[in-house]
Image (cartoon, rainbow, N blue to C red; front, side):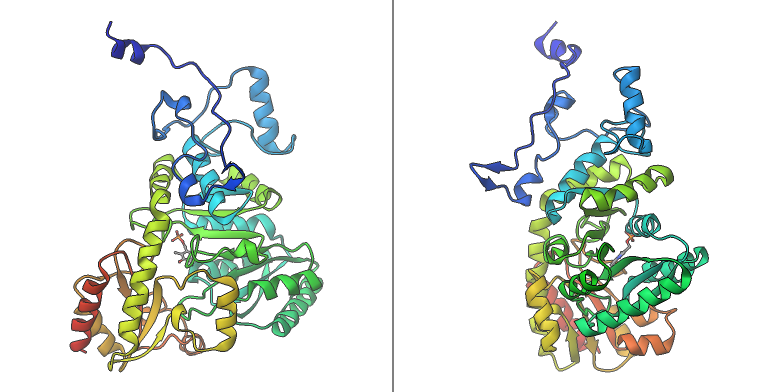
Length: 437
Ligand SMILES: *Cc1c(COP(=O)(O)O)cnc(C)c1O
C-alpha cells in the first residue's frame, strides 16, 4: 500500500484538541485572528484544515454512563447543559464552533445559533416571559419582532410597554414605573427590557447606558436584550454598555453575502441557559451547512464591514450636497446633540445602512430606484452588494399612516444598504439615477 492509501485507511487516533489559545504573552488575540482557528482543532477531523460539515442526526456515546451524563445535562438534572454532542436538535460540531466564534466578537461568555434571526428573538422572549408579565421595548422594532410581542405573546397573557428609541433617563424611569405597575396589576413581573438600536428606518439610537442605569435603579435582575443586527459585531458592542443579551439576524452583515438566513444570541451563561433549554425543546438551531457558511463569513466579516462602512461614508458625502436630496438619515451625519452623544459613547462606526430623503415623493423615489444599475432593488441589508428599497410602499406598507408619520417613514424615503463595490462606481450610479428624478 502506498503511504497515501495507508494514511487514508489508518484511523486517526482520537486525541483531544489543544486548549484554545486566546492570548500570546499576555496579549489578547483579536477576533479577526481568532476567526481562523478558534474552537476547532484539525486533529479532530483527520487533519482537515477546515471543519467538515457534519451531516448527522445523532452522536455515538462512549459508554452508557456517558450517555446518562449527557441527558442529565440536557434535562437540567445536572447544571451546565450537555458536555458533549448528543442529538442534532440540541447541538452539533459546526454550530458549536460557530457559537464559540460569535461569542468572541461580542465579548460574551456564551452564544446560541438559530435557523433565523426571528427564531432567535422569539425563543429568547418565550424563554423569559410568562403569563402576566410585561415586556418593555424600544420602538420602532423590526416589524416581525414588534408583531411577535403585540400579536403573539399577547395571546399568552404577556403585555408590553414601548418607548421611543431616543428616550432620556427621566423618560425611561417613567416607562419602567409604568411597566412595573402594569405587571403588578397583572400578577406578573417585568420579564425583559428589549431594545433595537439603531431603529429602522429612523436610525434613532437607544441610550443603552441610560437603560442600564434605569433598570438598576428600578428593576434590578431584569435582563436587557438588544438587537444589534444593524451595527454588530463591528460598529457596536452593547454588552460593554450594560446590555445582558445581544441578538442578531446573522442573515445581514455577519452572513454578509445575501445567501443564507440565520440568527444568534450571546451573553453570560446565566442569561443564555434558559434560552438553550427552550431551544433544546423546540428546535430552531441553525443547520450544519448554514453554520459552515457562517464560519466562512466570519473570516471576512471585519474586512467586509470596514469596506462597506468606508463606501457608505463616501456615498453619503456625495448625497448630502446633491440638489435632488432633501436630507440623509446616516449615523455619520447626526444633527441632534443628544443622539450624537449616544453615538460617541456607544458606536465604533456609522454603519452602511441609511435613509435618503429625495426631493418629491413616491414617483421621484421610484424613478431613482428604477434607474439604479449597480444597486439591486431588494429588502434586507448587510450584503456584499448594495441594496435599495422604498419602505413606505414595501417593508412598512401595512404600517398605519399615523404611525408612519410618527416614525418619519415618508413617501420620499429610500433605504440603502451599501456593499463592498468600488465607491466611485456607486457614486456614479447614484449620480446618474438622481439625474432622472
Ligand atoms: C432582518 C432582521 C431581523 C430578522 O432576521 P431574520 O434572519 O430575517 O429572521 C431582526 N432584526 C433586524 C434588525 C433585522 O434587520
